[in-house]
Length: 337
Image (tube, rainbow, N blue to C red; front, side):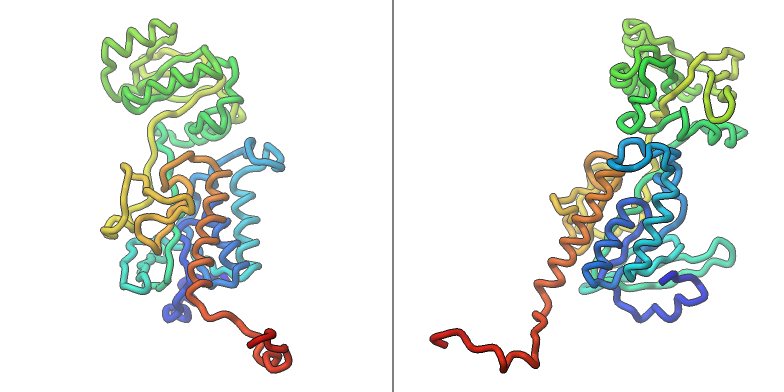
């Protein structure tokens, strides 16, 4: 069922078996499995996460490579709803451990918003990350190329940069080191700092040793048409020729709502989990980009399957078995009993 401010009051007394925070690939995978295990689950989606902005899905088995992420999200949401999951557009502000259940504070609405408290036995953190992009006065100019020929994921899209002239846009000096991995796919790399920081002499020498030019002026605009990049113009008037690029500026993690849970163990902004994505709090699971590991759609979908399955196992093992009561008297007892 789709929930909203119009009907949320009818669900405030519901105790869900699991609330999934995040309606991306991993979160929807978890919701589909939870629903098909017969568990009551709710997906809370803030809207337009990382996978929504994928313009193509080239590494997913069986998918047309030109399938945009938003199409997968749309169909996945429909699947989850059809199997019986609830779905809510909202922003999770805080999760509080109440003992046997969690209190989940959710803000609904952009204008005249209101916060409601929902309850669940388990929480699956699937809220992911958002990639940091260059900040220009005209952000539409960035969005015209980001996700098309200007990439944020080398593992996903390195192949599409093969032997092309590329820019690497690094948010800090340490991120320039991505150039020395990107060169597996192309050696024709120009490094841009967007004027954000000074570059050490040691790094300048390393780039020079590889033949990679360094440009330290801020980015003015991306050049090209129809999502196909042809270069980058800098504030000093220089135009760097490139038909593709990689943004290496880090990510913003949507994990604030878990920061007051003391039992959790963190590695930076990533949660430590076991093989079934269970965190060091036995009733909180973390999947996809929020946990330690490889940030890939295929991994997130598998993580959702694991989390849902482990939650089902826990609940099933703690529940009384279902018996065919009216047939018990008709079934012969075991010999010798």
